[in-house]
Image 1 (cartoon, rainbow over the protein chains, first blue to last red):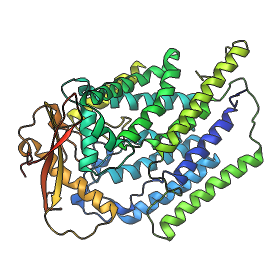
Image 2 (cartoon, chains in turn red, purple; image 1 turned 180 degrees about the vertical axis):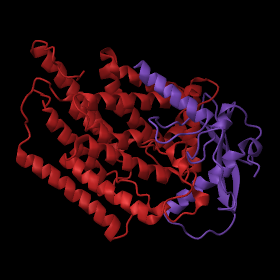
Image 3 (cartoon, rainbow over the protein chains, first blue to last red; image 1 turned 30 degrees about the vertical axis):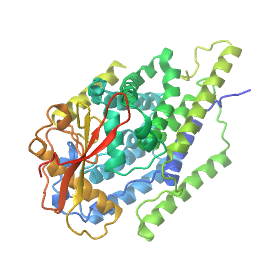
Image 4 (cartoon, rainbow over the protein chains, first blue to last red; image 1 turned 90 degrees about the vertical axis):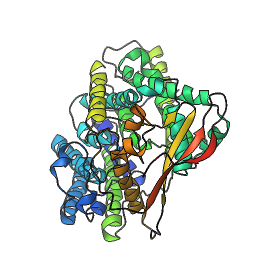
Length: 332
Length: 137
């Protein structure tokens, strides 16, 4: 029988922190702003926001201090020291580092990922509530920006596929094949599905739509990876903590993870973090992942889909075999 | 739920009227593309001088910095493209605004802009026609 793990909130939060840091160490290294410190002011194009207060990139020693503080806070955060203060400081410094790198011109939309350390330190059910809200805004804004894709006069996804193939020389599993075989109307269908799906993600707040949207999200990302080579697997830094938090049952009162296991998990994370720091500072290398996966999404999104399916099946089984509890968790 | 849509709409309005903010909760906005009826244009540039081999980060920086002046004067560079498509013209996803940030075109000279011209019918796969210099640099 498939049983979903029932977690104490503290266990879920610990696992969320370990998963977050583990993914950073293994697959998604933190950005470093050190490489932009040597750029002249002519390359400084800050995005709209607080970074416009600067006139140029800060001195290298300033960035070293910021990054050292970030790694120190990350260590404290995964151990669980300092609660929301450490979380807020950590998220703040991560945002500063990202903002400085984006001041060269290109912006990646990772704010939700950088906000996660702070949100995981909130009390009660605020972590999952706030993470879910941030995700819905993330998807809805992406869908609203593509409203013009709903026009039947143009096929935007085809334009992007052609740009990636001819302009960037991308080689992904289905890109060349799809450009060679798929007619224009199929790309129009992809346009419509993309926009309507992204606009519908906020409906995950409504119970009637929740399971369908949860099942669709990994498939959506997987399609984007195989068709266009755009890998959003970094979002697992949000998805996996959310799944863990959805496993929390309010009625459960005792922790299930033994102290020894907690110590092993935290120690492993700290060792991984130390390795990242050594790699960057002692050997002068830019942050690199320990696992050399070119497109992690090709592996991770099918796994995520499997986790969601198992979770939903186990949830259905659990509901069908016991009386409804008014204090049931938020799992759909 | 309504709050999520409202905040998302606010993000889009700010991005497309003033500029792309950071930090911001918005997701990736792959809005722009260049299509006129059944013809799609894919812009690219060629190096016209011998550029020494650059590290990956410097190559990306060069690519994205080149996009700034092109985006700034896009209406002059590609006058035949009007409307939302050209306002959201993207080069390496650098900027998504009709009011681009100022750039210094003298930083990375030695490129020539052009575009691949592709015929994209609805009932069959796209076909590369060739090159067309629609960007007047």
